[in-house]
Length: 411
Image (tube, rainbow, N blue to C red; front, side, top):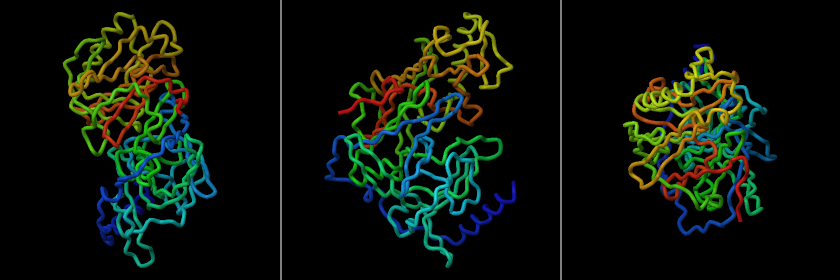
């Protein structure tokens, strides 16, 4: 562990001994919007950049501050706090495409009701104001630390109007993804998690739009993400959320080439922060058994020299696109057993990539490598060219096939 990381950890230990829990407020009370009429046409659309391979993530350009400056934010439905690397100054920051954000003077204090939503703490040192802090730690060794602040976010609405709300987010001055991890080359994270601290939830609290948002990742490049209900298509499949924390559906049965695999998982997670889909060990073995039959019939060979993904195959000549192999592979289906006729169809494009060596690689990983034994995580690859809707007004997720390379039409 390097000296800088040790210093920060010592600081956090010392800080934990001198903090007091913030005043308690009711999150439900703070975010009620009873008797609020949401204006149609008051949605926001962001164009996306990036792809599943080789970039590995999608990101939006979001303007923040006065004067507004652009920042690239990674789209993550797992994150609960929108984060931006800040020059506060920064103790440990990652390489980024833009200069570090200059911290605004609107620091969220501990007695601010918004701080409780972040589970913030009071800094009781005499030389610091009572600031609202955040600490984010993930199982994959990602660690982030900073303060909660507010700043202006200029948004152009689909009805042509412009709003400039002052919204809260995390101003991070320590970021660590662990050794050997290559984080997205962005300025921060646009959090779309199931929490009252997200940008979408704050806009809803202000009465500017419904707490409904979605994304559409193009299988080619880019796509779009939106907030508000004006872009929700009429032809859509809905399934109820199982959790008030993450985006979890289930139970669901896995079917390959129209045949039952005998695998049914209780929880199916949707996580745009994961590039690839992750199957439980049982589901992964069942999938490989089905794929091996396909491989043998089509005379593909294992490409052991291609380390793009754990499993790759090569043909008699290099493949140029998924179109070259889509007829060689069979579709997958997750059939949700607690909802009538609700299925998530995964075509070969939704679980395969073509590597830079011209081989076809499996974009579904084994949960055994992630200590995931009985769940399935749907990553970006399996949500390509699907418009995904997260309706937190009615606690449901919906999806429908879409051409994500084109922005949606709306009134």
